[in-house]
Length: 138
Image 1 (cartoon, one colour):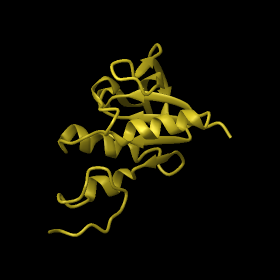
Image 2: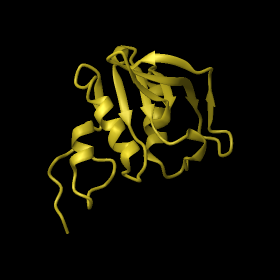
Image 3: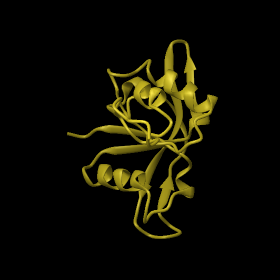
Image 4: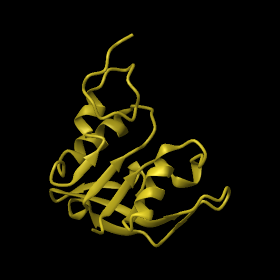
């Protein structure tokens, strides 16, 4: 089964291919034959009750300094995707909170991982990349 996967993340050019789990998730999606798209939080748009993103098709490879290529940007309706991976790094500012509210408009019809409400509402001591509501404060 071929899935369409969009990854909301910091720009792919900034990731550490040896330590970033988002890179590994993207590689695995490609290995499985999925179509992978990349967009950053500023490219997320809520217009006419649709969740859109100006996204680019992305190809990844394990080559330092040459670990990605991006195609031409396209304005895409994220509700047509199978999965959106919410993988951006902190800070948890208003931009981040806004993106979680926007992505809730397509979840769960489109699977958003990590669940936008769970990430937004998790206590400060939890990791930024969790999908559980059961974190404990220190």
